[in-house]
Image (cartoon, rainbow over the protein chains, first blue to last red):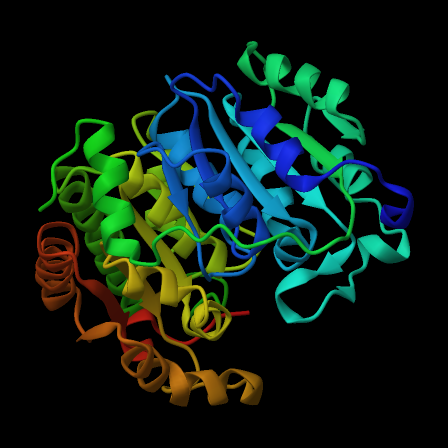
Length: 196
Length: 185
């Protein structure tokens, strides 16, 4: 249960994204976008502020377009729960360069910390296994997060799914820009693509 | 006496036309540099889907629900790929909030929607989204271009592809149910 988790979300995401190199990152709306921003804003990040349930699939489209690059989606339990079917789609599409990372506090942080399904013991990792993800892990310590960081860099024949069990405490917001057109153009420019 | 199992001349003509427009659409979308296709299986789109899935240059992703395609298309564009999303009118209802991603980010969006619930429809459950499809799309900010014949469909899709991929517009091409024909059991 997240009540017993000792891992702070900011430290967890900062550790996961440390020395990220040319990793491409998509962040899910709410706290995960703030966590990714707090870990260091970079043009290789696309922040979502909406489209709930879509983060992993934005990652899928990107991973399929750029098989030469590693892609990580950093999202929350509530966001991922809204797009469970997407995990099936990703499992079947089977991109080898995509990792879905769920920052799981068992709560809906944006709306008042209401308990989510994972806070009531739903196990997202078992769903990911059933959907065909390869390396599926649930971790709750910084040492384990460091290990995941190394795993993300290695070759794989299937997408990966990591659940980071974090404390359900409120953290000060670290707000990225909200303009998705800017985010899109910045992200594409970083890949050498020009605006229309 | 005619064999009830053998197709009528009208059926054969329709089948040839369907084949024609699917092949033509496939060729023109390829020429427009489409590289990803996202779809939920659909009888009206069946041939077009078959052509894309068989093409090794195309990344074809089957979805559990249509809204996934909107998110995939945005991610694909972030990586430089053009995507077309194929769905039925009922699927448009599943997409509404996810379309905010395409509209807010001005992501190129090309959806091709086959209509149900508007012409010789036998299933009342298809009628509400049949009525609501274009209204929903326009209200959320997606432009609708309608085609009722194979000839105009091809040029409509080409026009929509240009609007989407070159003018960063969000466009749905609506294929009338009259053109697709009645569902056969």
